[in-house]
Length: 293
Image 1 (cartoon, one colour):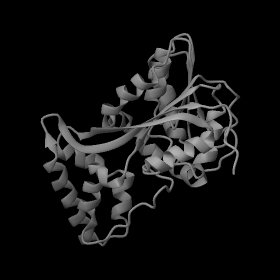
Image 2 (cartoon, helix red, strand yellow):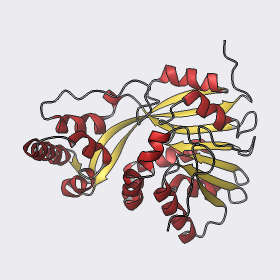
Image 3 (tube, one colour):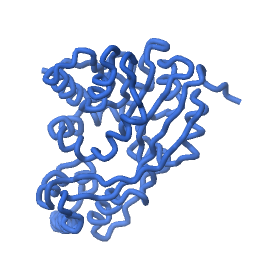
């Protein structure tokens, strides 16, 4: 039985409904594959965070908790908290932490945009692709920043533009079957919510962060051991389900056939890999949100 109930208010109700439902169930069920999917980014994030032995770590949008648990290992005399909207993934995260014998890690179902974090209660905030979904990003980062002391650091990963992410463009192209698929609105809550570097800087400065730096990273995403394995996983993903929803059966079969062909074309000796592009975003909390002009 799931242990979770949302602690505190929820501002991102639509995201909560998605991640606390079937989407979250799928991610929790396939936790190993999702962790491996972005494995090329994981060590980069940990190295940039450089969590010290006695530090307190807040992991925002922690999902199945890999980043939180690894942060807890680094903070052997400190503690790590992972927060997420998805009770299925948090349940998975807790089970894995128990199996790994980690006693200095906690997980809580909460909306980081509005959750009442204790002031200056963490030394570092991290997130592996978990901070692009806020309805009000300035308010969200101001709330998260207030959990840091002045000078406290934040290190997060977020996807860059659609055109730079082959894994998105190739899948969308395969599933289009003659349709002109709309692009996600710039800055809208979702995977590409922090794709624009100038907007990201403006958001973080307004929220109360300084020393904002964005480093572009290009890494392969791993989709499966071979094309058949990758296809079995991909066809059940929320993105593929959403892009094939409403298609006539003949169109749907054609779209999935094209997806299988695309995955075959990206098969390597190390599995099926598609290119991706992300920002490594680092910043330091100034100590207060910038006053509106």
